[in-house]
Image (cartoon, rainbow, N blue to C red; front, side, top):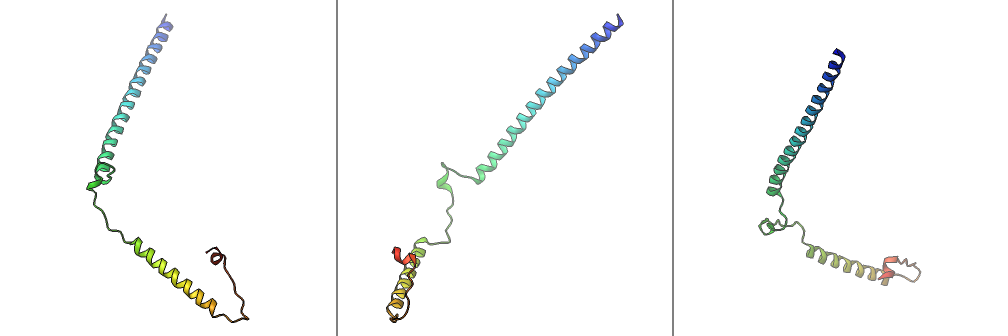
Length: 109
């Protein structure tokens, strides 16, 4: 009879242990959810200060760019014209005995 009591006591203690484990699991899940929620709120608050997309775009301060693309384009066109003129003058001044080497880029033009 004493053995039966011990077995019953062991079963009771196991069920209490299982219940406490379930409570701990629920508590952990709730804490993780709360921490995630707080972290999300913090990240959003910092992002609102630094990132603007869409609705508030007109409020952003525009920065001046260090490059003027139009001026660069004009300079490249002028340089290409000068090189082409120099190449034409160089080929006109060749003597009859010199060999002329034509590059692929010149042929394609």
